[in-house]
Image 1 (cartoon, rainbow, N blue to C red):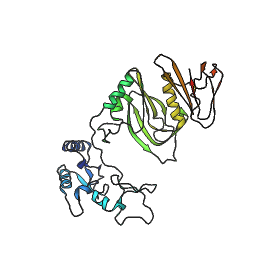
Image 2 (tube, rainbow, N blue to C red):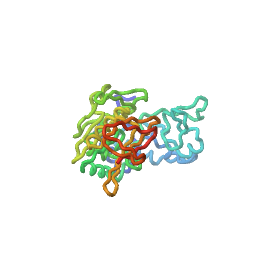
Image 3 (tube, rainbow, N blue to C red):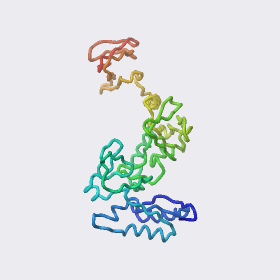
Image 4 (cartoon, rainbow, N blue to C red):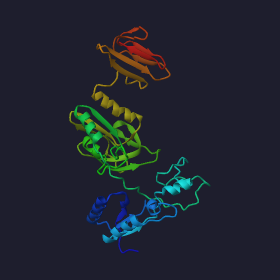
Length: 341
């Protein structure tokens, strides 16, 4: 029992170098944190083999907490299974919601068990937070290149869950979207996740969104479209940030196809890259320029039915030899191709 409400949360210092741990406790003191939940992911360290126990690291964590005058909530350590257990008893590995048994290396709680297939081990209590991410190195290489693209007049489009980890899956030690933040002109303050059947409205696009809904705080970017409901109603779902001679767009949720089409349409229009038959989603257009300067227009019909177009220029189909005048009907066969000059 305690005479007050404790203030703290999960703490996994075994995943961090000593200098980070020292800074942690300095910040804990400033924030008034008096209780730490430790040992959540330490099973592999405290029992590296079936008959071997080593509490050196855990003892160090507890000693440091005591020296700082903090209370601890000691976890069972079952959030990360030791390799020897997972390999010897594969039935303890996680099973997802579709009944698929995962390999060793993914977190165990919240997996669904098949009826009659529960392993003969004690099932741990589901923990609400994952392991603290490891620091990333080599930040900004890709971000710098993307900034150059935008500065020269290009457009960079990125989506939710971007800028969180590097190519080695190590988290950036900064606010999301990490090194992309200056380019995007935003900060992701929080995010919501819903079941697949839930949809959120995005009124400005006449679209719907699903799965993940990031709460975005503009830091120079302008809102293009916003969420329509819930506690984040009115906050940006899509933003645009002017950067040099170009711009950067951030889509903070999984838009439906009409929403994606609108965003991409606006970007392509801004660069005068919208094809002449953009109103036919199954028709792909591509322009190629020969070494002598001759421009060739490829039209590809990806649909199993004819595509009925209107010729936007007077040209000759080099594949058939037929000439078509501007404004005349132009029909592509099912899965057909035209090469216009």
